[in-house]
Structure formats: C-alpha cells, structure tokens
Image: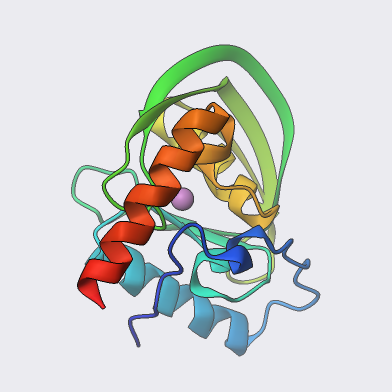
Amino acid sequence: MAILTILRYPDPRLHTIASPVAHVDDGIRALIRNMAETMYAAPGVGLAATQVNVHKRVIVMDVSENHDQLIALINPEIIASEGVEEHEEGCLSVPGVFEKVRRAERVTATALDMNGEPVKIDADGLLAICIQHEIDHLNGKVFVEYLSQLKQSRIKNKLKKHQRETL
Ligand code: NI
C-alpha cells in the first residue's frame, strides 16, 4: 500500500472530469487500497480519485466512528435525492477551510463495488453529504465553488500564501 499525494486547491487538475471505469480489475482494487490508506492517514472521511490525480470515477468514504467501515464506490451516480440540508464541510484538498454548503438531505446512489458488482446505497446524514461532495470531485468541482466569489478568492489567497510559506 502507499500514501498518495493529495492535490491542493486551487490546483487546476482538481477541475478534471473523471472517466468511468470500464473494468473493475486488480489495478482499480490497488488504487482503492491506496486511496483508503491515504484517507485514513490524512485523516479524512472521504477521498475521490481526482484528488490523487487519477481521473477515474472512484471514491472512498468512511463516516463510521471507529474508522472501520470503508465504502468504496466505482462509477457512483446519484439516482434520487430528497430534502435540503446545510452543513459545514471540509476537504483534504482545501486544508483548514470549513464552510457551510447546501446539499440534498438524503440521496440514493448506484455504483459498482470492488468486485464489479452493482450496489445501491440509501444515505442520509454525513454519508449523504460525503457522497455528494466526492461525486462533485469526479465532476471537477471543489466544495468551495458553492461559496461566493469573494470567499473563493480569499480562500485561494490563503492557500497560496500557505503553500509559499511551506515550500
Ligand atoms: Ni473533498
């Protein structure tokens, strides 16, 4: 296993639209294991392949208290959503920034699992938020893009300054 490098906003590669996975093979399973290790090490509750500069439709999540319930979804798609909820979000690609984002309260998603079998997930609470946030990454969208232009440029400046200081 390996810890992968996480792209930091405003890296333009975060805006790449990921391609569907045609075959769930050992390469995809290895990617999932490395993404999970990277997410747990960060630590975080979700990670999209986009964030480790692999532009395939793969996400990993674990919103459990003991960090022992990994969910890996391949080609995830939201097929139904319900309700509206505003919740404070963060992102491993936008360290130190937490902002409220409005999303659907409940979602139903379809995907393939690590064995290539179709799965359907009904999610609410943190998992529902996480699925929407990670699928956004696959579509090249970072959560701060829901915020006002003013807030977005403040966040960009803050992160650029931080990067200069830590180089
Ligand atoms: Ni994120």
